[in-house]
Length: 69
Image (cartoon, rainbow, N blue to C red; front, side, top):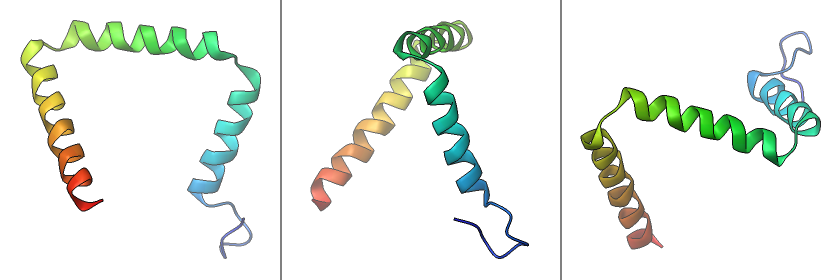
């Protein structure tokens, strides 16, 4: 799906295509490993309060979403 900019791809389309190509080249274990590394790096940079705050925000957002269903 091209936009009207001289038939160039939109960023969304380019990102989707890139994601699909990457997914074809890597297996489940690859994504598990990079997720683990990212989680470890994040844990080193944030404290317990950070995770409590984002958990609370996520819970509130989900509760609002359920109320609207």
